[in-house]
Length: 281
Image (cartoon, rainbow, N blue to C red):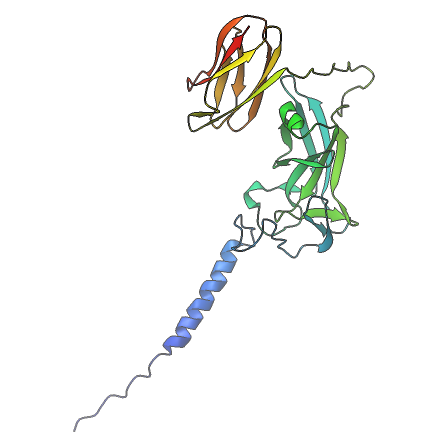
């Protein structure tokens, strides 16, 4: 007589997959550790207004970014100081409290005491800052239309502005009277005269725009060369022995008085590119 073995019950495959999927989700959430991501979600704007920290207000900071209000106790705080740079512009120092700069998390959800700062000149947006120190070139101030009131404002990673009592967390100082300088002993600088001619040149991927040609100027007049290069280089004006460093991605201004007659080439040293020819008559 033959006996059949009892059939083994089939495993609930669907249930197992569900358990594994749930486990993967839990593991994925714990692996992130709540750290803000730098990526924007599809279909969202630059300001995600993400995170549950504080309370989002309907009001904005005046530049289109909503206010994220937190309690005054333990709230982020900032002070700003400026000093003239011996070579160009100013060096800006931001002293923060209850706050940490997190450039790797920009665009993610708001986390208390984290984010970046923005600089405003007389209320106009000037630059974004991801650390305590920032060099403010004079050309950037001129390009913004000039001004003296420099404001540093703190923002969360999602670009909302930190606020206390419905007011942005910020500090303001003056470029005309830098913090830390003795106003009584400082000698005011005479205003810089406007150049008679300005030439703007952009270097990108080894190409010069506008195409190199001849720039005519009368003898004794001043010309301002504003050059921006996508690679670090050196600007040189032959015949006048004028040079200027070209940091990558920054506009550098070189001003000279055309006190010599002739034809003078303006070029870059490292890339050996002709930018223009100055014709002084």
